Length: 209
Picture 1: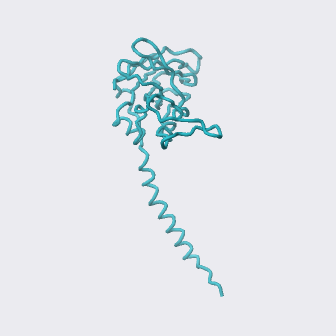
Picture 2: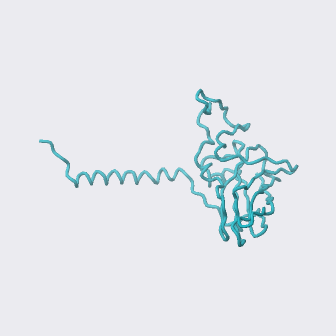
């Protein structure tokens, strides 16, 4: 005669499995840093125009990068992450759909930001050598691609609309090997959602490396 486990035995087994999975979860979560931007007023470099305040901070040191990207410091691979924090103190919602970011050097030359989804394909001078694989994908020689981590896209600036009284934050990325000392973040494309009128541009100095 075949014995069938009782309901209590089955329940005990399921409970034991759930407890094991729960015990493992904090370990996996601990591998990824949590990050929370400060209120916009707490940043040294900021600008206010037409009721909107924007702050910016370049993340270049290992200590800065650790708070947002864990073991990865993108600046070591010629990817400059710039944290952008925006607060809308005006009466109308602000559209961020067409917002455009540029890295402006002291000589007024500028470089556009690159999409967060393309950071892992960066070919900067300090990047590992990469080659196109047989199926068209990118193959990294010499080990794992250090820039292919979820935090790059998870932390990216993604807000499309900013209601009155609300704030938004996230990182924009620039492919550059030039230090942020003396450079600025140049931002255009913010619009009053009610009137469609462009807001004044923002030019925010960035802290040096």
